Length: 235
Length: 279
Figure 1: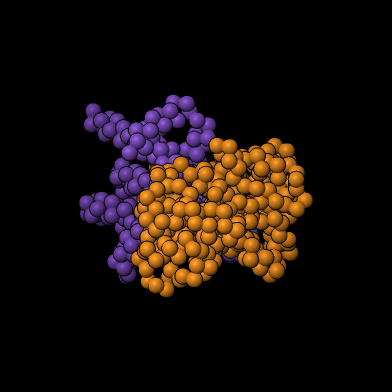
Figure 2: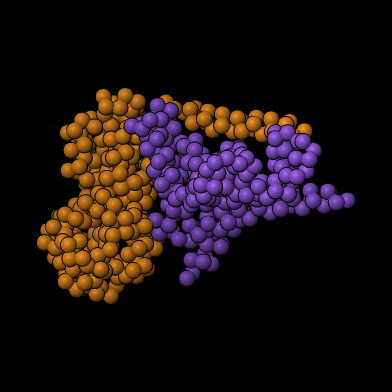
């Protein structure tokens, strides 16, 4: 297929020319998904730390439930958020449908279980390692949680990255609640879906390549951060 | 140190939320939501004419492109100010039930049946769409349906009725419902070497045609009328009736109608303006 070669050339051209329409879409994609991950991290980490450390009846069932929610289909989340934010829905008075905020809400719902579930595992592992020390030193729970989160920060960063990957790559939810409106709610994935439906496969693939490139650079940045921090720790 | 960091994280989070909320409130008064169809969006018409309207009036038209069925449903929920769709009976019902104020004829084009160059059902040049569909069903050649309650899907089902064939009842494997927008359905049809029904506008602007061509066209049954409706502010008080009506007036007025007439791909016009008041 000649589309492949064409797509690479087109992707390069779009990047080099700093296409303003493309920059707008990339900026919106990143700000929506990063906001969603930031909010989901706060909520998810809270749930994850609580479930990871505290023992309570029904904890096992809750963990299974959280793990299952990691597989929430984006299109179902989109539909639920649409029904909530629609003018005929319970939150219609907020006038949030077809805005970036609606997309942030949908992606937050998608990402929170991932962060809760994975951070629960990370913190639980650290906790089983530290528990005896905490007990023998009489460390209060609040300090213990803070110490665990701090010591696990790089693993938790990877958890946030997993969430970001999910958020930035999904199309099913944002296309329903955002509406793929040009200049307002058009992000990378909905733009790719639109160009595909116009039959412009080369442009669609070029946008896809750029999306992969963005994901790569975000992950590379985090890896570098981690590397430099760990090298500083061992001097 | 840790608590300071946490506090900073909260501040950043609060700022993010505030920014994202305030960003949506700014232009609140000067935009309308237009619930429209994938066929009009995929044809590129909106990109060609809406900037002119915005320059003139300062009103931004935010297009949500879904199937006609979903557009009508969204408008019933109050999630839009104006409709531009193509399923006249449903549009008239929408107005009759009080959801819309009035229906305006805006423009038309026509549907065509497209298929692969080797034309396994041998329908090329048939004057009647119904006869062509009957031949497709007799030869069991693959046919892809939108299957999404869109205007095109409704038209396709009406044509099967004309052909006196019920493709769903036969349990046929040659009849395949894509459940997707116009462009996505064209991709599917080309990928499966199947026939499909499409509006001419989307077909002309479609870029992944392969060896596909228009095989059946010109039957009066294939006429495709687009209508505009203002969502009734009596049902949904938040509808921006003034701005919405201004857009409809422009669309059916001389400027909108001549811009629609002037939108062409490779010298071929995609839509024919036919508002009674327009030129």
